[in-house]
Image 1 (cartoon, rainbow, N blue to C red):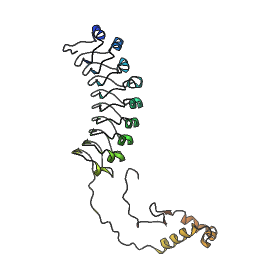
Image 2 (spheres, helix red, strand yellow):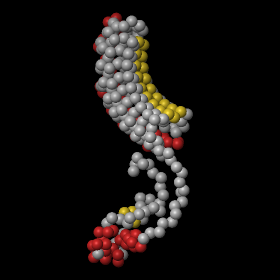
Image 3 (cartoon, rainbow, N blue to C red):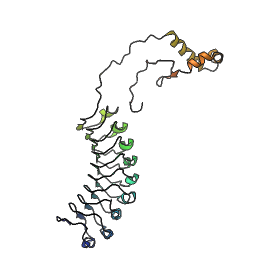
Image 4 (spheres, rainbow, N blue to C red):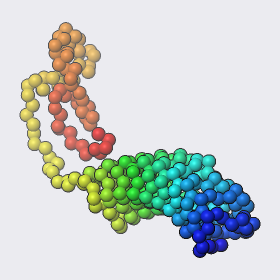
Length: 293
């Protein structure tokens, strides 16, 4: 059923069309949905785009046959957990151009969802439960207020398109390199300074990254010049190493020299080879993630 004239409520006769599979009510002035729509248990597609809805209609949570739901260009501010939890067969969810600030963890119930779009909303965060939506092939979160994406995004193995342009992202999830089917990535207009370590593993066909603060990486020699250590550093390393052996003379005598003990308290050990040092340790070269640091 399709309508082209402006209406402000759903006609009563619609609820009697119990075999209805598609209902297109977009481009109207509808402010709410009647509870009588519960009778449309065969409804697979519902388009309520460009209306005057201020709330996510509660009746939708009972339309279990829905596969495509379009609620773009309304005035919706929240997604009720109890409603979204009932849309288990949803394949497409379009909430573009609303005023939604957050998604509930119950979004994990949409286990069959393939396309999720919340372009031009007010999202400040995306729940970790997004990672449960393993059939997602396309995510559009363009023009929101996101400062980060959930680490669990790497679990969406079927993802081919990810649009997160015009947000406030200062980094991308470390596991993004595991998205082996990702072909399109749009991160333009964010605050990125660098890409994750495994970024080069992505099989991208299209990458949009203009309008960021990306740092230019200059190549450097992998062989480090030998460093001449001070006698103080060399002796300190020897004492620290010997102090690890509880049966050594150094370990037994060290408590008798409180000034030396206090000095060595500033020492540390290399995270790579576990060798002790006092003030500097540059022998081990290891490329790491700045985010983890």
